[in-house]
Image (cartoon, rainbow, N blue to C red; front, top):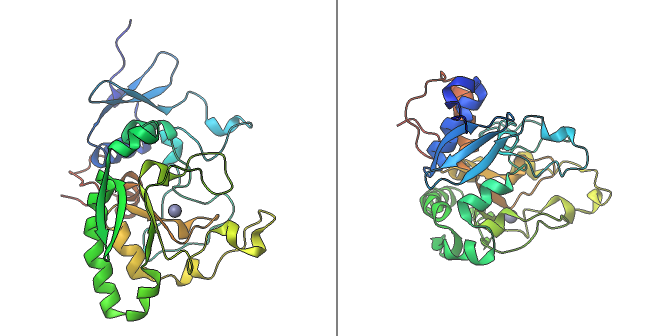
Length: 273
Ligand SMILES: [Zn+2]
């Protein structure tokens, strides 16, 4: 078999940022290889391969679920970091497109597999079960949330952890929830709704929710600083939902700072070391 091309030979600038952020976020990813058919593959340290991009753009295939995509497409929308909250027209839900092959490779392919890699962390006095990397990141979010609640006691109503790992589908969808991989937790669902719960959205035309703009910056910032994205920035909003996607936070930081292609070292939240 012909040797695979080195990734430096075929990466464009956006792919280079993606790969840099994927490796910073997930150290078990080694490199990217191109196959003879033009598809590109992430290669893990143990030799496993995950599809990074297909030769053709996956959304051209009309029958596919647009929210289940390859890794490159999952990183195409730039997630806006706090305090920036642009309007979220239909189709703008950065982070809501996911590569299920990557999630399975990182966290496990079924409930038993994922369960073996879970850790329990205390957040504001409640225990939350997440994949260990996400749990370690969440542990560092806690003090920032506690400080925010001390400064503004009214925030406490929004800071009630209610769900981490759970092997289930996304409500109203046929695909797995990020909660099934142990990378998401919900805060105060009684105050911070999911779009399908709101009466005005019953025909699947989503009316923006006032909390998408009003939700406290201090809470969202505390999570983003540790590699979590917030579902309030999605068109199909999920205001209670925080999800560990350090590769997206990394890319958002790179884009915000217009860093050159040759990046200095990044930690897993995209901070320059
Ligand atoms: Zn959730």
